[in-house]
Image (cartoon, rainbow, N blue to C red; front, side):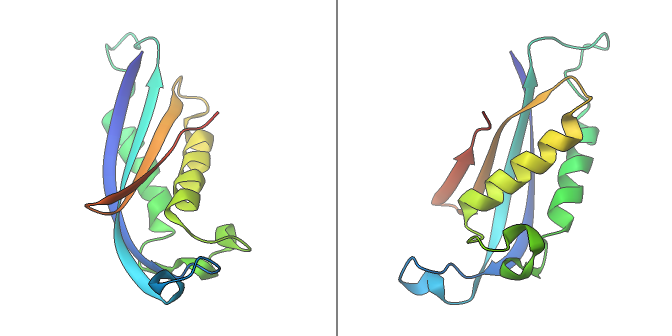
Amino acid sequence: MYEVTIIKSFSSAHLLSRIGGKCEELHGHNFKVEVTVGAMDLKETGLLIDFRVVKKWLGEILEQMDHQYLNELPFFSGINPSAENIAKYIGEEMALKVKTSGVKVARVKIRESENAAVTYIPK
């Protein structure tokens, strides 16, 4: 199995309801996102997939959330925009983009800080 990981970041604000504590108040993060795609075989070029392609796809997804209030975005309607739900959203959007590329999304890791991270692994 070969894997390629791209790391990008975005900044946004959110609040998390029904969890208690300070996170129920409006606050922001500089999120770091790691998206890993993988497949068993390389292409004839000797690459799994061009880094630039994955970087472009991830950039398109993150652009929708960068410097936004996540609670107001349609894809978080009715759910907490938690790191877990952000990771799942990015994973599902990446799955749509990689569909015809010969790779699959292996995992999405979201870091809210140096000390807190969530990983989403699609089925």
